[in-house]
Structure formats: C-alpha cells, structure tokens
Amino acid sequence: MIRFFLLFLYTTTVFATTIQRDRWSNGETYLVFLEKNNLPVKSLYYNLDKDDQRLTEEMRAGIHYQIAKDKKDGIEQILLPLNDELQIHIYKANKSYKFEAIPIISETKTETFSTTITSSPNYNILKETGSKKIAQIFVSSFKRSLNFKNDIRKGDRLVMIYDQKYRLGQPFSMPTLKVAMIEMHHKKHFIYLNKDERYYDEKAHEVEGFLLARPVRGARISSYFTKRRWHPILHKWKAHLGVDFAARRGTPVVAAGSGRINYAARMGSYGNLIKITHADGYETRYAHLKAFRRGIHRGKRVKKGQTIAYVGTTGRSTGPHLHFELRKRGRAINPLKVVQVTTKKLKGKKKKAFLKLKKAYDKKIELQLQNNTPFIKPAKLQSVCYFHQRRQ
Ligand SMILES: [Zn+2]
View (tube, rainbow, N blue to C red):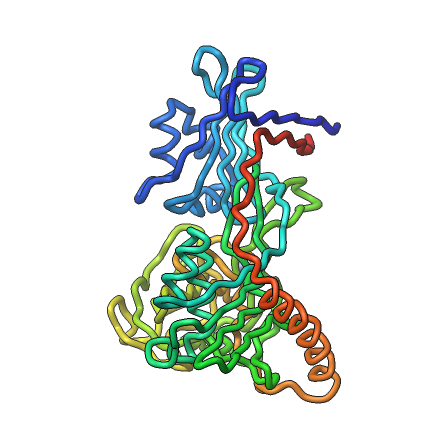
C-alpha cells in the first residue's frame, strides 16, 4: 500500500500546525534529543535495526532540522537531515511514534558571481555572499597551486560558478564548485570540475588535493558509497557511507593517507575499528578488522601505505571485507573521489572532452566579468509545500 504524506511547511500557522526550525547543538546525541523532547527511546531507537541505529549517529552539530507541532504543542513530525540526500522522519501515527529514513527533496541551482578583491579572496567572498561555505570551497580549491598571501593585488577579480542545493527554500549542504577563476597581477588562474568529478587546471592537469592510497591492494570493490538507496528486500531507504573492499581474511590493510590514529578498538557494528586523523579535517575509518598490527594504537603516527591491520569480519558483517570510510569535518564523503589515480594529466579523447567543457565555462566566465553580476541573495520563500511518498 502506498500512502501519500503531505507536509505543509509554512513560516506561520497552517491547519493549526506550527513549524519550528532548530539547530543541532554541539555534542547533542540522538538519544538525548529524544529524551529532551519526551519521545519514546524504545520505539525510536532501541527497537530499530542496527543500520537505522547507525544512521542516527550521523546527526552533526549545526544541522538545521524541523519539528511540526500541533495546537497543544505536541510533536506531530520531525525531519532530521543526515546528509544532503537522506533524512530521518519521526511521525505520529495511531498515537505512537514511528521512525523511517526518507529521501530529502532538494532543488539544485547553479549560481555565478564575481567580485573585486580589496583585501583577500576569503574576506571578499564572505563580504559578498555572507557564506563561510562558499568562501571555504573557493580558497581550498586553489590551496595547493596558488599563494594568495603574496601574489594578489588590489583590483584583481575572481569568479565562481557553483551548484547550491536548496531544501525547504534554504541553502543546504556544501556547495559544489564547478569553476573558479582568480586574477593575480591580472593573470587569470582557473580550476574546472571535469565530468570525472575531479578538478583540473587550464592545462588539463589534475589539481592535487587530498589523495588517498587504496587501503587494500588489488581488492575488488563489493559495495560502493551511496548517501541513499532503496533496499528492494527490506523495503526501506538506507545509506552506505563507505566503500567495501572484498578480500581474504588476514589480508593487510594499509593507511590510505598519513596521519595520526585516534581510535583503535571495538565499536558496535563496526567491529574492530581504526580511525586515522589526517590534515585539513579529513578522517579515514577501517572497519570489521580481524586484528590490529602490533604497535598500532591510539596516538600513533602512521605513513600513507603503512600496514595497520588485517581484513576480518568482526561487528555487523556477513563475510571478510574492509568497510572503508572517508570523512571531512565529520561528514561522510565518497572515498573513491580522492583515491589516487595513476594519470594526473588528461590525454587523448579525455583531454578533448575536457577542453570542450573548459571552452563553454570560459565563455561564461568572460560574460560574468563583462557584466560583473554581483552575488544574488537567495530569495527567502514565503512558504514551501512538498509531498513525499511513504511505503508500507
Ligand atoms: Zn560497508
């Protein structure tokens, strides 16, 4: 049976329902949240399966969530976004509360703006857009190739084209940079997002970011990263926030990047788990391990490619494999996007395709520089109405 749920989310009262918008605070856990709101921990946590319980650990500080309340201040529905694609939906049905993971309905808009630098790119982007996230993606994209400190002159300009997701009329999640251009002493420097989802400069050289080694050499990938997928047998939405490498029990697991071990012990459904902290807010996780290598413990520094543990099937696992995760400032990202490739320079057909894409972007940038369109503040929507589907 398919039931349609209709959510009216208005800034003011509609059908006697008020929507409260809140921010997930630092250190807040899902269980504490339930208790704070007098919600039943048994049906909304302890009775859930392990995968759903794991999802509840994905709530991060600073995330905006919504609570719909009735006239008597009773909770009707809650939406807790876990990433940019999946959210927890808690709702009242037959006087009890239910839990489900459902897709996030969002809209993506491509935005463009340019600005003249009077101080620093970071300062001017922040001043123009009011968004730390936009400033951050611009600055970090050029971090390895340019030195903003010494080489920028007042009057140099920059252009950004990026995709921004909107949820319930508000900018949502990290923007995706598509092209960035900055003048330094009036010489233009570019970064382009290619179809392969990697960044290249104007000469079709890959812009080196944070690069990882494969954590298990020569292993087959048995499950890919996905922020949401429909499970056809369990009939529900799930997420797989890592990549699974199938390998024999005892196969060495290597550190995907240099860093410091901040966890090496058992952790629930992860089984034996290692977490490594890397530069720039990155963290890698290695789960279901059979054992840790001798001398591997919390606090130890490791080098990229160094053996740290062995493949196993501890925790919630159906057979020997490595479950590998990459996180940036706590958020799960697809590790395969940063796993090192042998070629860093595009050649042949791939280069041709890239140059075509580049040409189209260059036109847009040129137009932007001519028109000098400022950043347009996203219009706050008066009301948002949306449907979502629930299966039973
Ligand atoms: Zn996995």
